[in-house]
Structure formats: structure tokens, C-alpha cells
Image (tube, rainbow, N blue to C red; front, side, top):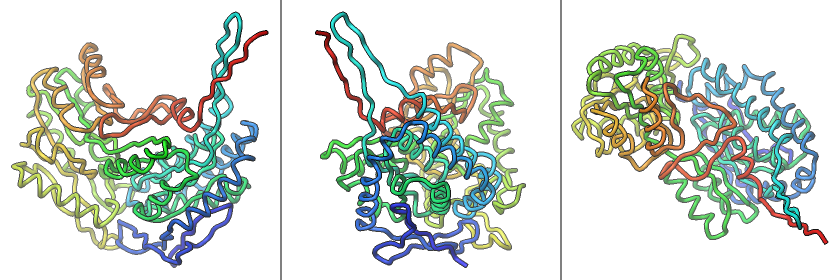
Length: 481
């Protein structure tokens, strides 16, 4: 039986006002597994009304009480980890192992971390001989959190947790492609006895539901993760109303490999940073830049590893790659591979759809793909593919590496592999990226700022940065008589 997902507004599960629904498809099987509300401006208006009504009470709760609600929901996620991981696997096509060991546990961590921040969040005071000035950091009101399909619960909770901890009420819109775990989370909110209207979740397409949400006059901030084109549209809608925006957008991230690196450690991590979650992570390194003196060695070793990766049923523990998220996305990725060939690139391994048998005969699987022979100016090295596709490019020295690393309009992340501290320092300073990992990849500390530069976005999330984004600072000056 197909699941009928409903919106969660004012503490109740409700059908879309339009009575219209979208299909939710399991990308590993191609089968419809759920019906998703095709919500419109009427549903957004209802959610905004519920959130506005809840805001005075929620914002005035002692921080310890807000933190208590969040920690109880984290407990609920832990109790339901297996069912949430299964839903994430069915909805997204990712391997069950990845969902169970990384993504659902990270949702728990997001709530616990920001629950703790609610208790330790403080502001400054400045004393002078004749006055004291202090800063109030007050919640904004109703905020919108719009999350993508690649890490559904992971990134949804990454947005809503700081917003709630700061005292705001939230209207969340998960991707209509992967709505299951956000819907399940609302059941947790209900079971944990959260006040009605504090968290509202409205499902639907970006063009209809998302645009109506961003355009609603009650919204005082928007946190969005997704494509650069959509981010530009959101910014255009918000600018005339002077509404805050945190936009984490696309990337074309370089992995920079110097000859003096710890080779085996680098190789193991580069395979992971290239193809994790079928390459559908905004932080995946899709441009691999290799110092020319070790290019041939790396090429041979990397191709051997990539060719041996197991693409299979996400429920099988042996599978290293599952399905990409949808048929249209699969076709887009395959189109990008065809473009690379037309641009003169050589596909060294992969490059094709993988057709499985049995349960996954109708699924959307692509072989890990490695391409060489393309310069930095070609579209393949300029445009985000967001799939299991990487390119190889040689470089000569440090200066050459930095030029190649910065040769796109994006600037989200980079990985640098070297045993030379000076090279690491120069790369960290000169590479245009919001995050630079040295001899590592995806090592995250939730206290640190996260976000991109250039067309990879504006604003920062994480730790104090997130709490500042979801609050308004006010200076109060009291002068002595």
C-alpha cells in the first residue's frame, strides 16, 4: 500500500487544500511508493497563520524548555533509527548502510547540538565610565527552511534545529522527491507533545509551494540549500522585502593532490569524496587535480578502484553505490557524460547506466565515471553534474594548482593533499572556497561556519553563525545619571 503523506500544520496532519498530489518514486525500483501533497499558497497561508500564533509562546519559553523539546525529539529519532533509515533508502536510492550509519545519526546530533546552544547562547555587553551597552539577540518570528533531496533528514534538521533553538517558529519544505523522513519526523513532533504550530511542514514542488513560501509576507528569513539558479530566484524575491537569506548552492569542488601526499590515505579518501552517495553530495570533489609527476600512477590506481566499486541494490550491505535520485536526474547525468565526449573528453571507466535484475530492474543506476582530457574552460569542468562523475586534470606546481582550483564560478569546498605545511597554508588562504580540507574530506565540526563563496552561495550555517542568522541583534544603551 502506498503511503499518503500529509502536510503538518498547526500540530495536525492535513491534506493539501487543492486536493492535488504528486508521485514519490523509489529510485532503486522505479515504483511509486507514496503520494505527496501538491501544496499551494493556501497551504502556506495556513502554515504561516499557525506559526505566527505559536511564536509568542515558543519564543518566550525558557531556553531549557525549548532544549528539552528538541532533546526529546532527538530521543525519538534514535528509537526509530532503523525505520527512518529504511525510509531514506527507499526515498532517495542511497545505500541503507549510509543512511543508518551517517545520515540519521547526524539528525540526532543536529538537534542535540543546537539544544545545547540554546542553553549557552549569549550576547555581549560593553561597559564605559558613564554607560553600559548590551546586545539582545531576539528571534525573528516565522522562518522558512527549504532542504534538498540528497541528504533529506540530515539537512532538514540542520536547518530547523538552530531556527527552533533560537526561538523562531518554522515552516519547512523538504524536497518533493524525498519527503518521507520529514513526514515521519512530524509524527515524532506529535508524539513528543510539541506545542502546535512551532514546526510546520508543507510538501510540494519548488515552483509552486517553494515560491509561495518564500513570497509570503510572514517570512522573516529563508535558509535554502539547492541549485544556484533557484537560489538566485529566492534572492530576487526576498530582496525587495529586505528578508534575510542563507543560500547554500552548487559546487564544482577540486581535490588537489600533490606528489608529497600520504598516497594511500589520499587514494582511499578520494574514492569516497568522489562517489559517496552516488556523487550527490554538494561537497563531493568532482574535479581531481593531480601533480604531473604522479599523474600516471594515480590514474591507474584510481581507475582500478573506481571500476571495482559495486553498484547494486541499496538494501544489500555489499553495495557501495545505490541509485541516483530520479529518472530525470539520471538522464541529466548521462547527458553530461555525452557532452564530455563531444567536448573531447575520454571516458576511462563507467559512463553508462547500470541495469540490475530482480527488485531493482526498473531502478536508476549509473556506473562510477572517470573522464580525462578536458581543460578547465570546458562545460564539463564548469557546470555541476551532481552525480558519480569526476574529471582528472594534471598540474605542475603550487601556483598552477591554485589557478586550476579557482577556475570556476563556484567556491564551496576543496580538499588539499600534501605533507608540506607551507603548501597547505597557501592553499587554505588562496583557494576560493568556504571550506578547505587538508589531508581529509568531510571532517565536520558543528561549531564551525559552513557555506560557499561566489555562485556557491551567501551566508554561513553552523554553530554561532546559524544562531546569529536566525536572530536579530539589538543594542541597548543605559547611561548612568
